[in-house]
Amino acid sequence: MVRPVSEQVVVVAGASTGIGRATALAFAEQGTRVVCAARGAQALKSLVREIEGAGGQAIAVPTDVADPAAVQALADAAEERFGRIDTWVNVAAIAVFGRVEDITSEEYDRVMRVNFLGQVHGVQAALPALRRAGGGSIIGIASVEGVRSLPLHAPYTASKFALRGFYDCVRMELAQQGEPIAVTTILPASMDTPFFEHSRSKFGALPKPPAPVYAPELVADSIVFAASHPRREIPVGGSAVAFYLGQRLSPAVTDALLSLRRLGVNSLRNDRPDNGVDNFDAPLDEPGRVHGSHPGRVLHRSAFTSVARGLPRPGEVLTAVVSRLHRRTAKRGHTDR
Image (cartoon, rainbow, N blue to C red; front, side, top):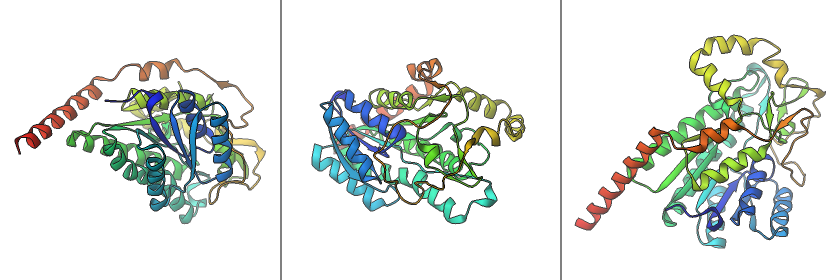
């Protein structure tokens, strides 16, 4: 049985800034014991101070998710401190913006090691701990770019496509085994976080989130919701509709539209020149923050997201039934022996 969020122990991998930081704070507000992980020790310390200052419980575990041994050490630290893990949230991500031919092989490799393999490492460390706890949830942050590609963002888009396929595999395997472990994939649209300012740029200007832009707290709310109400996928932000419909109805027409400079290149290019600072290879020496510096309108509500996550879809219910049947069969077999 899924524990109430207020009774859970939650690991947030990628908690130093943006969506991850908003998620850690949102869980802490509900009384969750939070294990905060990221590369930046300074940002983690400020996050734990903020949580504890509000009466919550949290620990900081500096972790590079690209290192599987470090991720396993994170899981061990969580169990040692709080006794178990109920929910594991994979958030950490980096990006490089530029044309395919201008991005080096080493940069492609680094993005995949952090964005994709980092979440693989998280799942592999989380599963044994969740089994020891009697079940729980894995929540992976992908992106609407895992549904529909955007120009000038090939490594990131490729990593998010890979994550959607990966989590589908994990979900089916757990259902086959009758495991009481839920898998939810979160698909955020454009968010006002420091992610764009921290990304590496190859086109001489700072990247920016394409409009419409949403507050990262919307994603955090959906993650907290999924910890006690698992869903297969939760898109966050009304603009996700355009990604889904464009890819489902006419991907070729969507290619043409995004090839227009106004909708493609210019929607990602900031008016501010690139400052040459990024967190691509190492964390920035900053205290950490949730919001970015987007100068335009930021939306704090999404009716589409509320509806999309409201009720399980028929296929999700069917998968849960299959999992329960496998679990009962396994129990009967164990009893017969």
